[in-house]
Image (cartoon, rainbow, N blue to C red; front, side, top):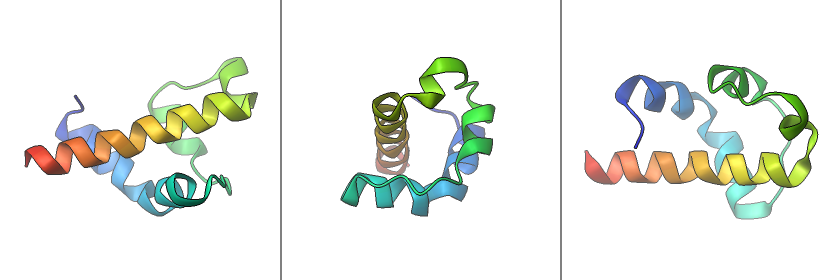
Length: 68
């Protein structure tokens, strides 16, 4: 479960996250969010790892909004 502060950071990247969720395309632009969540190193250069991470952030958004 994410906290409000994390939600408000993630939501800034909603368009990028939703594009990946619907099309499977990561167009870039979420590097600052990755830094915020300390998602670094080899995982960041692994397309399937980035994809999984983006899908997790999409779930974070949905769960947070459902609970509010």
